[in-house]
Length: 148
Image 1 (cartoon, rainbow, N blue to C red):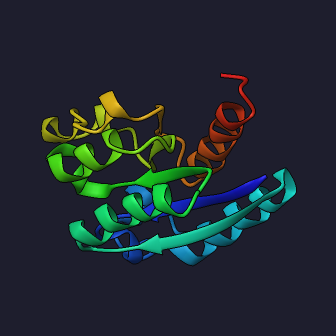
Image 2 (tube, rainbow, N blue to C red):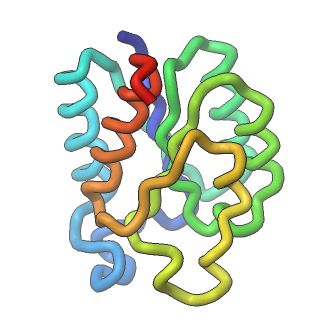
């Protein structure tokens, strides 16, 4: 069916250590393994990238378009709330992007309530812990199969 890109932004490399009461005890490696397993069962390959650098994420989105990636699951971390560079990158590609957040950003500090990316993504999954990544994969599969 193609390749899906899983992008994780700043501080997500600290999962399992950083605020486990908010983000849980699973590491990013644990989550990537779980998503890869489910992606394979759906017929997709999964590529993973985590970066604490905005430009790396922008480059990865451009590369997704240029290399024919089927879709993107992205947890942009704090860039959610202010990165117009990532927003414009998503708007400038035809690859569907599903935004994922482990926590419910609307139930947290007020500055987290707004996603500048939401208007240009295919949709958002938030508040379901690490299982949100699997829900994002399922949503992306629906989109790619034309079932949205």
